Length: 140
Image 1: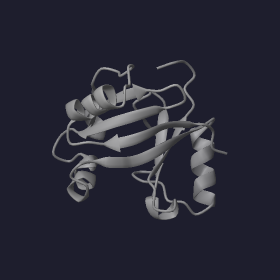
Image 2: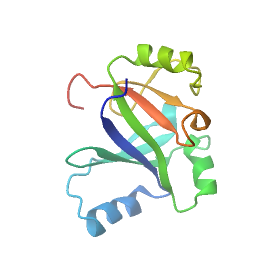
Image 3: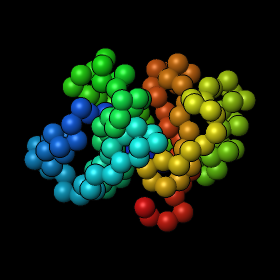
Image 4: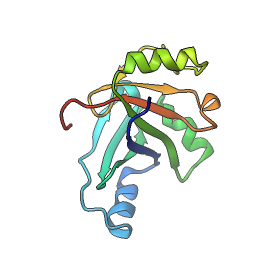
């Protein structure tokens, strides 16, 4: 059911510091400008790699879901992994049938790539927060 790995989400207390690490230490050359999704409580940038992306995410606002993660992991770290699926509704329904819990309302919302996404509860995914994202129809 899952398609390719789209990205690994990395929470950080500072996008600027995270970008310095990926650019200056690891040698990344293709990093997108900062964008904010206020409704999801994040500011983010993508580090574009040849085979996937790293999504750097920083809290935005006092009720950002990233704040809890950073309270437990003050330096940041891997937050989630994201896999592409052809049809987000079919994927959601299949996950429910298999007993996986969908976070939030259970309805897909639009993610950073401009496509519908859902998150699966880490307790149902071997301890890992999993994002499913409908495969983009065009480059974002």
